[in-house]
Length: 160
Image 1 (cartoon, rainbow, N blue to C red):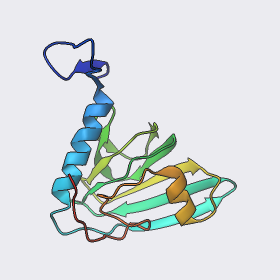
Image 2 (image 1 turned 135 degrees about the vertical axis):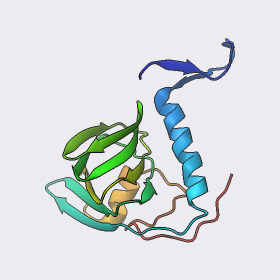
Image 3 (image 1 turned 90 degrees about the horizontal axis):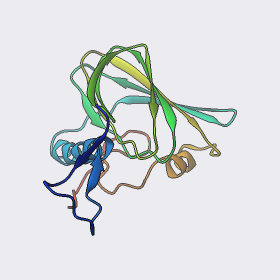
Image 4 (image 1 turned 45 degrees about the vertical axis):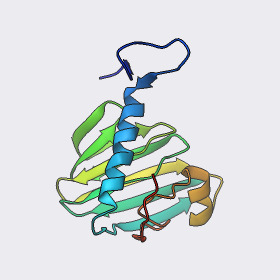
């Protein structure tokens, strides 16, 4: 489903009330993050590799785990290597069995539910050579994020 939806019954010429499906999904994912933050957190096994101006992030998820990521600043590839996941996309929630490649746009914030054990990877063009610098380069700062740079759960005080 693509296209434009409207926030209210009428368009107001003085206010930009057009919302894209991607905007709506991002809002839903942020609301989900707030609710998930109230539950015990899962720490996925994560491997980081830098090579030739690229950064690869491998994330293992056990079946039954739901994880919300951060907002990405740049385009990148999201590869479901193995397993089946339900994932938020610009078109809504999709159930995908790997291998399957997705293209992520700037502003993407995903929720991923592992229906089975799953391995997912992201591939990024970077100037960075360290994890800390890559985090700054690739994702927006999020005080409500549930994870540190290396996907370690952090204590969270949700702000509204």
